Length: 89
Image (cartoon, rainbow, N blue to C red; front, side):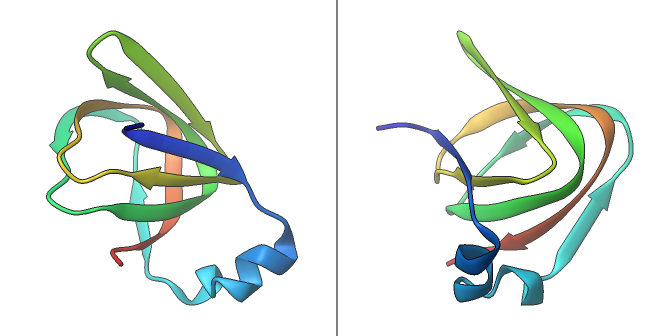
């Protein structure tokens, strides 16, 4: 099972998923540990973050649609202030 899924969405698909109506979360440049107790879907509006998982790193940038899977333990290394829409299905 893949713990992080990163995709590019068309504007039409983003509208179909109603992403632009999801809540927004913002965070400045920082590093912190995080664990997901449920799946999270998010769409990065601004910024850049490197998600570090044992043995892997994922770079997420503006325009990426990301699914973080339940149970994921990672380190968020925010390189540029981020702003994202998020949703817990």
